[in-house]
Length: 297
Length: 267
Image (cartoon, rainbow over the protein chains, first blue to last red):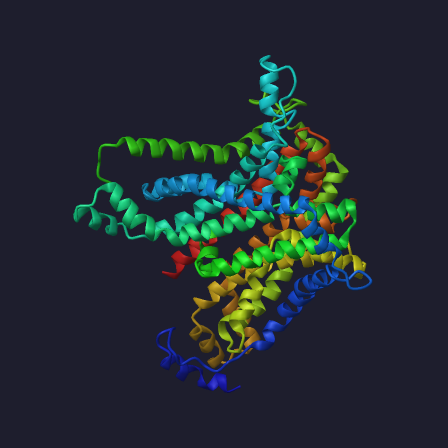
């Protein structure tokens, strides 16, 4: 290989790592295993599912027909979207002040208190949802305490309500929102706020007109992330909700596990996928994805 | 920090934030405490200290099978995603070929598509291929959701990699493989360890893919929790949850530590 002989000269020439004198090495073959893997276990299943949604021994649209003609599916889709929006609004309303508070603390305090956000963020979602069953369930802590005190004579059904699902989802997704907001707020130059103050702005005005607009990327990224995760969530509505809290992922699972209607399951999955892609395309204009994943880690 | 008088707004903000942070951590603290409770029913605060639920977990055949499956699958997932992820990351960072950006988006997409869709798609595929419930099929599924993290971490590290070190080794007569073994890998060790931990935990904590793609006779730990949550309410699940939380938090804390140390070393 000529590389060997050229290397010292190239190294000398390429003083800065950003030098444009990049050597014409090309490694497309290294992508083959990963791409083959993705095509087999990602592309193919999705294509097959798309096919399955219109083909059941012959061309059929029964899955889509059922979705578009049965009001119950519209209701489920609507409920799923409402859940997504409410979770987004709640996590943003709670997370924004908390991130703002965290970012202004002393460095040491920020590090210590970030653990309160990171430990839930790092724990398994199932465990965190189970925690709410322990707290709110029929034989849970709150009911046992109330029964023990004689305030109620039979367990109060906290679970299986809209509130339980919203609490579970907000609890689950709040760390994502806080981390997204925090990573953006942390990079804002605080001198900008001081400058605004020096120029005569009130603290409130400096906050609203200088700080808030600068946090927009974090708000968009956090909202996008939380919404997408909320509408695709399966375990939280399944464990904390009841029949009335049925979301699109739950209906899909139901078709597979109990109704055994694969055509409908495939059609419903395609609809959820379509919703996801539409939101994705919309978000691409506002959200810097690289920054988002950097922030969410 | 200069001292300043606290305004009413500041006090409200602090009180609110402290309360939110307390609520964030409370459920996890409660699970941990309940897992050490001697009582059959959920009680808080616990009336004493006991390890009976941990003993029950370690002596129960089903829980042990599930643990074995989870650890095995997570380990294999970490290995497979590292191999695939390392090769494709090198190509992404160092290669020049058309469609690179498209490829990057393709590699990241399992992160953005709802997992339930991936689970259903793989379920159809595995049923048709008659490999539903095999260890490899679950490893493949988990590798798919681990890959975005692995590619993200490794390509970030490769971007910051000083290639002149490799060229120096090559010009001193090292073969490409020797260079890889003695220069590239040691330099990338922190990133490789982080990526492996991330992949392990992505697999270890997964519930949705496990729910669709495992057999009931050989479930993963989260699936076994799932089955128990809906039937038996005794603190054994709390004990298992405590152990799982410990593993995830410890693993990801290690990632954070490794990354902090490697950025410090780079300075």
